[in-house]
Length: 328
Image 1 (cartoon, rainbow, N blue to C red):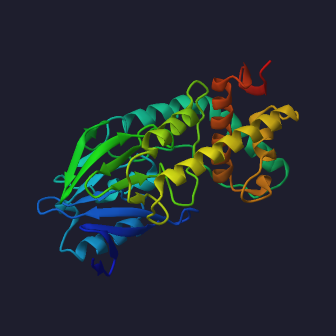
Image 2: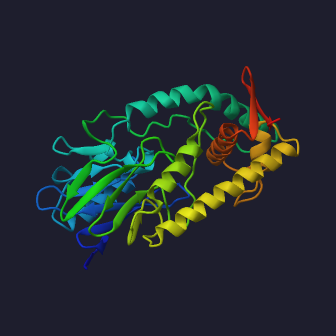
Image 3: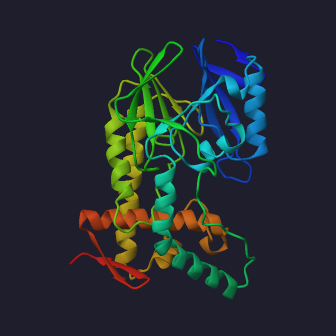
């Protein structure tokens, strides 16, 4: 295998490009260049940032390629995976993604706003009352601004590039549009953000009617028993031992659900109180930046709504007020 100045060959004909994610705790995105005699493909492309565009351009230049020479495949439509399309898209470029990757998330964002905007307002008022530094926070989570022609992928479809024949596996949870790709011959799986080596994928939701965590757990079980020699994730390092990592993630969320029930039992009933009282990797939740509070609130709500679907917690909604109690 060969390394180039701006990429590393991690499997025959597959090169890992570390794309920076400025001002983001994840720090980097793993973009994968799959070589092909006709149309090489990039899997995931980073934020709509000049830094992301420049790194991809330099990596492609090592192979004598430019953006018009390649196609793009998105594992899901979060901004750190597809936002850069607004910079790098060319008319000759084919974009492959789950069929609900772009317009539906825009609609879902609008639907969720009725839940998350009152919560954001309440957290912001609390921070201002404590005279914490204010930060401008946008709830516009649209992944891309442009409208690009997309070749849609669904469960069971085959995506061919180079010597690889990747089976598409729909894995909703981290995002409703998430897909993994599995090549049986090489036993390689592109896992996107569904399964990461060390990081626990964020499962957030502000939809009170849908069980995002339930979808995620079902998707974990769906990929667990694939014969995978090498997993290529969207962040962190490539890894082996997919089944073991899946089991760890399921156990993590089981423990987190128990913690949510314990907090409700102890008298914490609204989403802000439960979130601020929960255990997190970093202490002093009240001092966090608004963006990080937002995602932690979404994660807490996803667990609480899943508990409601499981019948262990009940949810009471009165206008904009949502509270949680142990099921009777």
